[in-house]
Amino acid sequence: MLPFKIHHIGYLVKKIDAAIRDFAQLGYVVTQNTVFDSFRKIHICFMEKDGYVIELVSPADENSIVAGLLKKYKNTPYHICYETASFEKDFAYLTEHGFTAIDSPTPAPAIDGRRVVFLMSASIGMIELLEAF
Ligand code: NI
Image 1 (tube, rainbow, N blue to C red):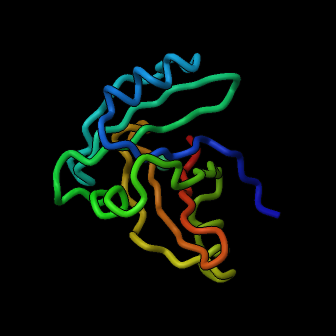
Image 2: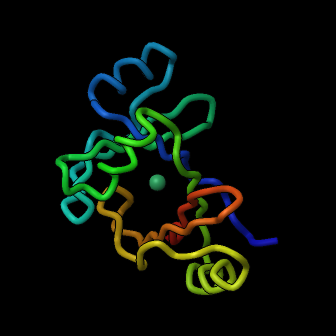
């Protein structure tokens, strides 16, 4: 078993401000205001309720990395992010155990510039691996 901790659940939304408003109605509070990730062309914000952290992700334009996903799945949770202190090692482990990297590790401006990578499993879909401090 890998020494992972769940960091957040990624939630794809079409309109981030409207999504923040509706999650707030459910009792979520904004823990990080909306940030623009120019590399992925997305707007991101973090909210929390009862210890559960959600990451709202909204495409900034049609070239966004998530524009196609949003078209296909609409507003929906779409990944769980796992945080690890041994990023390289766990990334290698996952790729040797049925997970396929769908991008390469890049800094995430919305998460303190820490490296993240997305992987795909045929059985459970997309996950995100996040480097711990
Ligand atoms: Ni994420």
